[in-house]
Image 1: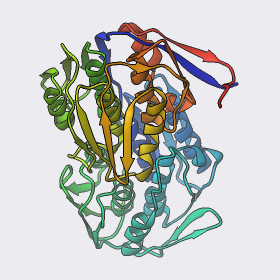
Image 2: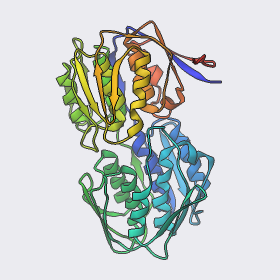
Image 3: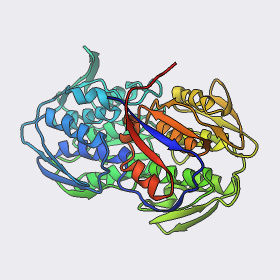
Image 4: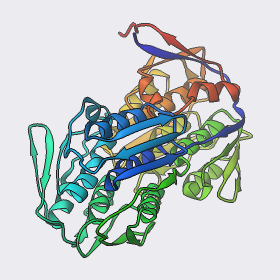
Length: 424
């Protein structure tokens, strides 16, 4: 049975909300547990669907995984399987991050091609090329990435694009390679720094975390650890946009506001009042209708592509005209088709979208195509008249723990409803 959210328009969101661990970090940290025999404990895990799915992926190669509340305990055996091809692989993109740890520890891997959000092509060329530089062969066979090496040897690796996934896989393979690996033009996201921190706690030797160059001195063996996941900056930013769109007042705790400097600065340009609390959180107050600003997605520290749907949704209710440029995932703009259903005034041309703000959106049934698009449609529904039905909400459940409950505590009126859609 399908589920949807009934989102009642007209709410002004006010109050406090806590942000837990980052989805874009926890799944990779779970994969990193493959690098060391023994029991690794990861705390501050978000209670989202992707965490147990990653647990299934790890079980498929022989781990014991126990998930209780916000804690994941992963016991990695001395003898691991090199084949990660469980059904869960097809349900989340991050499952491919087991490739690097398996190659690093076992010198071989067969990893089913991943699934996940429908936001455009995300090829694995850079992942494979990085492993080849380290001395592995890598091919695509029968729907799987197949990699094998006699030994892994440190190398100089240049990434054509600062891919988060490629950086993570190469990094996790390199920590157990012989010699020194230098990864240039690597991703700089806070989640990469979080993985570096955990790997260092496990005994890895890594320099340059948070910069565009990582230097990895290979070690013979890693040991288990206990690690707390950093706060989810994408979820934190979602609440910041929610405050601005609904002319609300939301205090967000549990996330480092400096990971969102660009977002918060842009919201100030839109007319919001922003207060930050060291590395613990922030507050966004939007006293009047937001003003239009332009947005351009770029790798960190630029504006995250994950937040592009919220930029579109905010622009749709702002005063004036905004230009949104998407430089990362070409299919993100399918979100705009659903915004038009809500009477948004938006047009796309290649990598660009022009959005002319309207004073109020109009409710309609809409469909989420990915995690962030789903959350963006819910926020848009709060700015529409009547009741907006948001369908395919399983996407939202993959990225936002207790989303409906948090919104209702802030003053929204949203219900989860079972039933089949009547789609024209």
